[in-house]
Length: 176
Image (cartoon, rainbow, N blue to C red; front, side, top):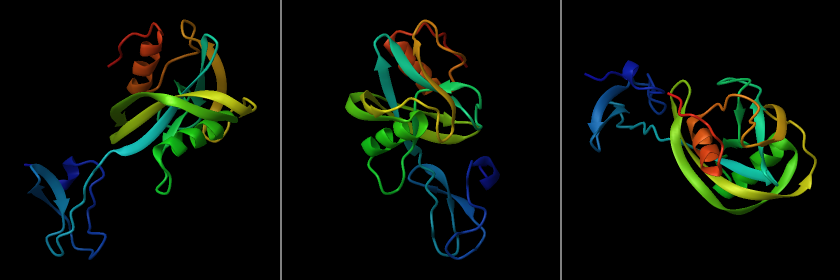
């Protein structure tokens, strides 16, 4: 039997009426549901966007300042805000994390995954070109730089980023 304790991020109490939540099958899935007012908590993935920014044969990566996976490397990426479209997210995150202004040139890939410890995410990766700014680590990046695909600076934090880098030609091995 599935309980609220088995469902990541499930509300214990209803945000509408404050009754204790229960697990009820809805749409073929167990979902946190309020037995009092009928509120159903849908646990959908959080959308994010990332940017593939190249200078010649190098690609821009940022080192994470904060958990999860602090100290590891990613493409410039972040979560979509409620009031922006996903392309705007990509441009904003590139600027916040690298100091560079970018122009998106095309969609590269869409990957799903889990942000540790248990948050489902969907990340839209765009290719982009620089159109201003100056490279500097910002926001939640400890470092930012351009690196050859065969000489990446360290461990790549997330599976979706490893998939993108492998598709670009980086010789990364599969990780669990």
